[in-house]
Image (cartoon, rainbow, N blue to C red):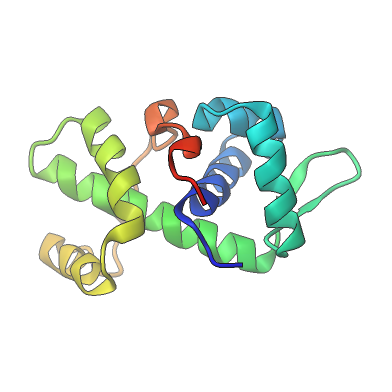
Length: 143
């Protein structure tokens, strides 16, 4: 499975939900991404078939090792980009919206330069409040 932007968005949201609530439910994914439950069902099926997530007996979802790796990388990029933009004076809301768009397309070279320029290469650049319901619909990013 080629990892599409929308799949990264789903995995990232699953990681955020796991960190926030301790579990991952489809209904919470739909709410967090602003998509329909059928859209989540379709994405969950694709992600399960590709080995990025598993469904537990209680119908909650769990990221596999390879799903977690993608989710963590995407979430980390989001946080760093948002933090960097806020450091430039961009409002928190706009920084998170822009980070959602940039996290998928930013080259590794540019990302590392942002980290280096900010002085946070390997440092603590985490920012609370990265759950962003205004994230936009993953349906906008057709696979």
